Image (tube, rainbow, N blue to C red; front, side, top):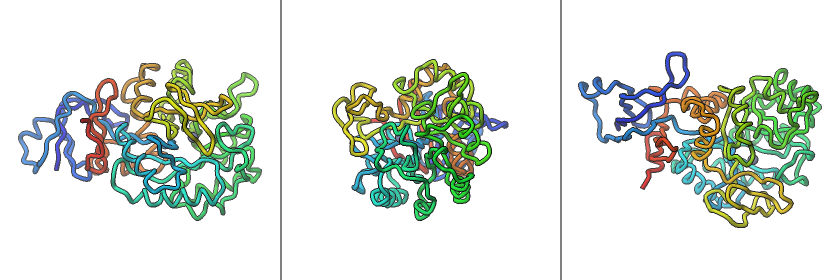
Length: 387
Ligand SMILES: [Zn+2]
């Protein structure tokens, strides 16, 4: 077993909410085996073969990233088995222990190829774990396509995704395009696929019905590529904020103004999921890049298509957490919950990961007060270690 000492541990209290606790020792192998008071640890006889000194840093459950297209030159859609592997390694550098490589709106022949690379990556134990994928399109609205390719948008058809139900964990759809009395969403539920509303021109009533009546419980990058909040037409944003749907937020200050981050933080608490939605350009600096066959230009934190449309982000998860905390002044426990407990519960994985609890997988991220990652541990192995 290994022991982590001198950390500020972010742990669930008796109510299940996260609290920071100091003076604890965490013992793990592939799983978390003991969480002890320091005195209990020094007086006991635990077979520890390595002690890690967290030196006052936070010891947190590993982060989940449920919406990421690519990073360091690699993209989920690349016909290259190494692409997702590169993403696994880089995600670990940003404190992420599990993620959902996210597909774009393509034809099903190309998607099939991407899914087979995801399926292979799910078996790979190197860097961060691949849990499956988030399918962003092709069942979306041309009116809110954003950076998705319109020619590949098609009507929703569950038989098209049935062969991939072992891989697809979240699917983004436009509810106004369904016209099936909730049948498609029900089929997804039956196979434990989370349905997310996104790239949608739906009105409030249609979106609310999809959430409350049919059970869509996730919103893809809230505010971006959907009908906004108007006082007489509350739109998808209104439905998202007026229900318990879990809302993704890209917290790079490009997609979402700091004031809007604060508003959502107040309203959503345990139903907020921070994501990166990053492109292959993430981690590479300024210059030309590519997304879904279209050219992208990156300058600083802004990535745009030729016509100026925002094309996703170049955000890293640990930077997003820092930006969100700076903007909202939310307690660290709340900020961390958005990338651990909330997504793990939604994906029916909270029995296994998403908190530092005895018996769960040893997915642990150690970071300092400015969210610089010191060490990322995935199922007991070091997936990243700061040099
Ligand atoms: Zn996306």
